[in-house]
Amino acid sequence: MDIVLAKSAGFCFGVKRAVNSVYDEIENHNTGIYTYGPIIHNEQVVQDMESKGVKVIDDLEGLKIITEGTVIIRSHGVEKSIYDLLENKKIRIVDATCPFVKKIHKIVFEESANGREVIIIGNDKHPEVEGIKGWVNGKAWVVNNSEDVEKITIKSDSKVCIVSQTTFNHNKFKYLVEIIEKKGYDINVVNTICNATHERQAEAKEISSKVGAMIVIGGRHSSNTQKLYDICKEECENTFFIQTTDDLKEGSEFYSYMKSCEGNSLKSIGITAGASTPNNIIEEVVLNVRDEFWTNVGWIIQDNS
Image 1 (cartoon, one colour):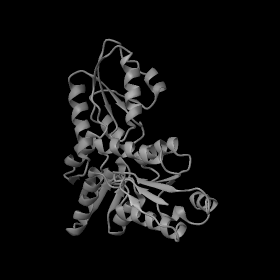
Image 2 (tube, one colour):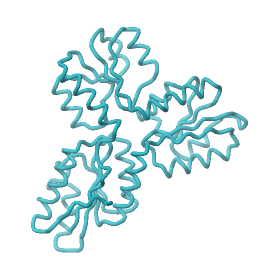
Image 3 (cartoon, one colour):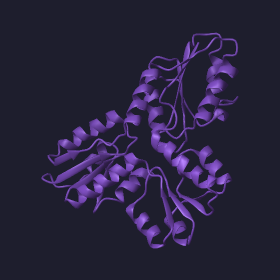
Image 4 (tube, helix red, strand yellow):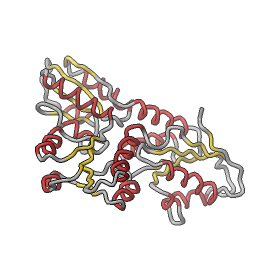
């Protein structure tokens, strides 16, 4: 049996940069360290930071009451008004926004200032999208499906700029752009899905199409991990979304499935992970699958190259 581990599994550049920025502040023995929202969507990482004294501020009211210290801007980015508030309060800012997200902020700020309507393709409730909306001069339209497109009331002769949440499904983005184009706008389409997301999704699709079962590791609130799960599930019915090895233990859906496969035709299992999943959790899952279920079976970790 083979364990096929995705090369792209785990921290992306933006997440690694954000996480390192927090641990750098801790290492420098700075006190009064805050993050505005979870620095990334991974409970284990956030809990470790909290154990080292980092406090998570969940809302605007929480920001308003602090008078000193350092606020680290999460990897998903925030609205322009948050920067303005912190600067007015003279609170030190460490900006850990993913550079690819910062690029979107710049695009929508400039495009809307030049008179273009802005359409964001993504999840309206996701923190990244909420942050992007906060850099638009005027109203921002957010679409996640074809029904949302139908609700757009921009005049047909308007100039429009389209951007995307960085972790959005690449194929779905193209599909929605094609629908929007039929409305007759003067459109400037900027595909802001980051390359790492596209590569991760393409690799997950390829691996899941070839294995008997698939594990997707990541935080329950991670948008990019949920999209990986959806992609894998389309290719492989036996796809399991887990956060840690606790989700592989007796009583779990995965455990029951693996026990039902003992002695029969399961030849391979694939493993991928979202952009906010640390390497140590991925390694623990790989070793757990090997030791708990395939103790007496030869195994390899393929790099899918």
